[in-house]
Length: 451
Image 1: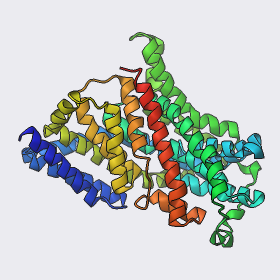
Image 2 (image 1 turned 90 degrees about the horizontal axis):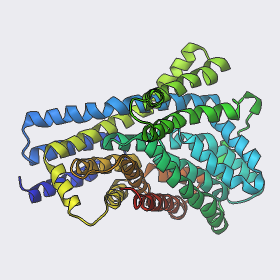
Image 3 (image 1 turned 180 degrees about the vertical axis):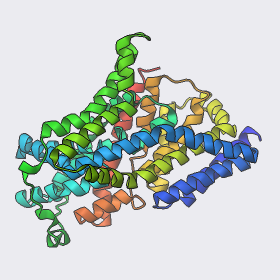
Image 4 (image 1 turned 90 degrees about the vertical axis):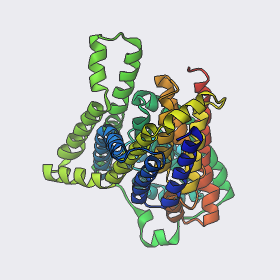
């Protein structure tokens, strides 16, 4: 098939994907597979070659993502059950004081969302927001925006949350670079979209704690701090895998190959080992040592894999999508077009992710789809390991902007904050868009100094 024909096939496949994807993540999994089959058949691939591409794409992607997301989910669930998230929030709020409570909430969200899914973290922490709003008589948004910004930034930018892990897996990016650039881009995004925007919008729109929340007494949750794990323990458990992974990346650039120290930290700093260490320590310190039986810890770990399962399947389907693009020849066409184009690859990645995000809503699906389209280009265009990390955050930024009514997060915030659709667009949508554009501005600026 000609180059023009392959491009037309790709466009039609993306259109089919967006038509099939609605709100369900299961639908996204099926849609990615159907779109991959469509590309294979329409581009003239042999039927057996299409099947081989599915096996290669699914197996190659899940070999990494299943282990990392699975371990991260177990770690996060035990942190949730043990009260670790509440401990982080309460300690930071108390230490920062009432005058700087917004910064404490933003930092809390930033840390808590590293091991815990955004929606779960919001359910855990939102009673603290209700309590602060009732106590101070300030708008719920004054406290809610910083927390949401912290949660949203880490959810999109910092592994081991599933989105950036999935993109890194598809692109073959080093997680150390992804974490480093995710934090560098995420902190200013959190500050601008959280405390600063929260202070502004809290004065413009005054929102009280919803009556239906008060009636259900969700806003009156009390915490017995003596029963919660220590702040230091929770913080160390969360930071251990991030530290080991980043240390592995740094030592890999400064120490020569064959060095014994580099080899040791290459092993313990691999995401498999780093997350295994952290998860086992969590099982002991937040589980067994706090009175949970082995059976109870096992039950908690097993339950954590329920929401992780569909994320793993979607990512695997994204790997199939990528591999089909490569094997069908579309990757070569896209790569050659990109090589002859003046548009920076990092900008192209952001725009593709933004388009898919606006069209179908899910940030995770937008990330995986964009990664699948960019990955074949990397077969032709040579980029550095650091640039791959920047590409991951660029895609994550594009998949964050312009959240609206087709995004489940939009309705989650709408419900918990008692907002109208217009108010949700003025608050949550604007906040997400600020995060995406600030994140992209940071990584695009860094890319100007990296070949």
